[in-house]
Length: 115
View 1 (cartoon, rainbow, N blue to C red):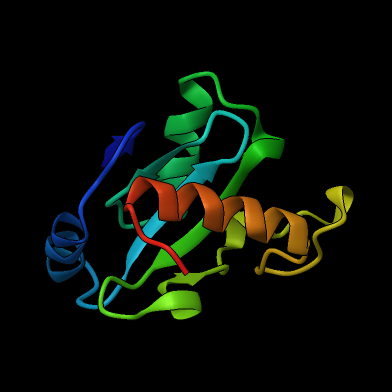
View 2 (tube, helix red, strand yellow):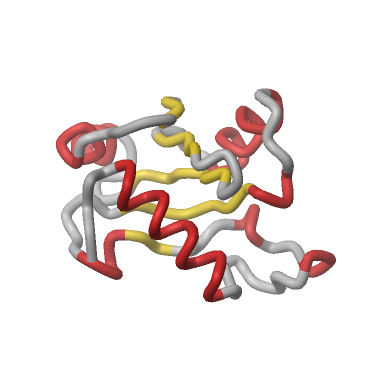
């Protein structure tokens, strides 16, 4: 697991994807602290790591990153940790367009990647 507070390169992400799932890297992002954890087998492990380091559960969202894809296909909003009916999110996806935009903005900033 690796915590990303500043920047990460697409090359680093590609290397992670080759080690793990061969096309994607799982990540959990804290939309308030604008940090994320990448490179774990389970979103739940990354989620736990961020909670242990002071993140608020309501600010954490699970995503998948595809280093070989471009634009909107680079980020996939899919994780079991996103399933939170009590907070208005009733699926594995991130249903709020506002939260999706926050996530994309943070992720693309970390990679110097723009739409």
